[in-house]
Length: 606
Ligand code: F6R
Image (cartoon, rainbow, N blue to C red; front, side):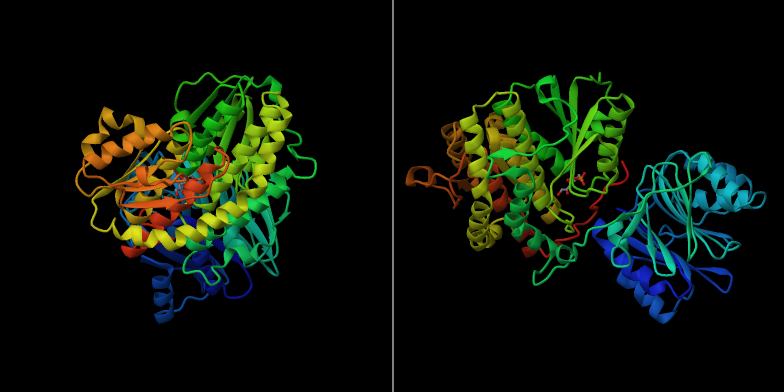
């Protein structure tokens, strides 16, 4: 999704803005642009497509300037085009914007009546003209303040003024924004990742905050226009995890390092010596929990769907799962005895954040399970459980899904133990089993890397695919289908195998690839009979199981055998062949693996 960069320096900023925009590419975007102040005037350059195109434009017609803003845009209002790309500039002001201005149509009419001529279909251009208009009457701070008060919706802004040619201004409401401090220059960024190559000293803006950057200082104001001091954080050094290394793309790397991320996460939470799980300062006594509500979007929601099975098997607590974009608008009765758990890789997903915000306003207990610990969701919730997966760059979530599931599983075991709903023996056995998970994942990875490319060929001519599972395999089927859709653009459905007869069986026809997840568990026989129904109708079955024998494999096109482990850990192993399958299908179709079309890594608009 859109990304912002701003730099106030005493030397040329163009190349650093371009390099930082490249860091933001992972978020998914369709156009890019930059504006600097050159000889007292605003110089704007924009293009459709990649930052490389912008670089080519700059090569032919270089920009200068020690003050600049840059943007990568993911289209919301108006098609991806050069006119709609940011920055949006008037003679006096240049603006880059993340978010959505909800009252842009009304504001546009008013501004048009005043004679302003709009060049784009975006909601952002109203900000440019509002600032330009207020600037005629007011000083800098009042101009910003009055403009922000006129806007409804969410935004993170980076602004340049022709008149104030030594400052970059930032403002935040709803969409994240950070300030970074460098040697004789200061930075603005929509996430710390974009700033990391320049600094590890960061301040996050809160909702309503405005910042004014020069090359040697940063001033912060709150929504009441009062000057405020803000905390500076030092970011951890994770250089090694944000480079592709020898891998072809980030997604391969992120899939292949799952054994290591799981190992790190287990080390953070599990004390193998004492056979215990560390969960200090949990915001609610597990004994007092009335109900747990797990909330997320996309893959994060699938990890919630998975956790529902674990919680229900391990505890007596009623569990609900919810999609954040639904939760936030339903008329839900929030209850102080419930625990609301928000799952998010980025910690910036607009819908998840809004759902959390709703809970905060109703003063109910919140906990977040995030990868980015400096994120808005982490900072706003009562309690944070990091997944310790390291930066995930590929747009399609892989290692973060595994990490989210792992933390949810660990949480379920711990809550169950504190509530005395499992025996000590069982608790210790579960902890012991976790020790073996990294090796089992490694083994599964090695095996599936060799076997999935061949299977992927079968998907090349298919017009769709189905993923079926029962019980603990059902949420994994959902995730497998999502991975295939987003990476290879093939239509895919994830379904509970037992639901097939109620409609989806009509989709099965000669040659349709159907992935059946059938580990040896209490659903096994039932899943296998569902599989036979698919085979009987011509479906091309790819069976993923840990119980291979001749009878079940008859008429199965491919069988993938994953290692045996405890039933609760099997979903972790089931996930791997599905990630690799989606990857190889997408590779064969020459899709952009790390940046699938239309998608963004961090979905900061609803
Ligand atoms: C799918 C994927 C998305 C995200 C979703 C939520 O591969 O990555 O479905 O899971 O957009 O994002 P986070 O976890 O950052 O809240």
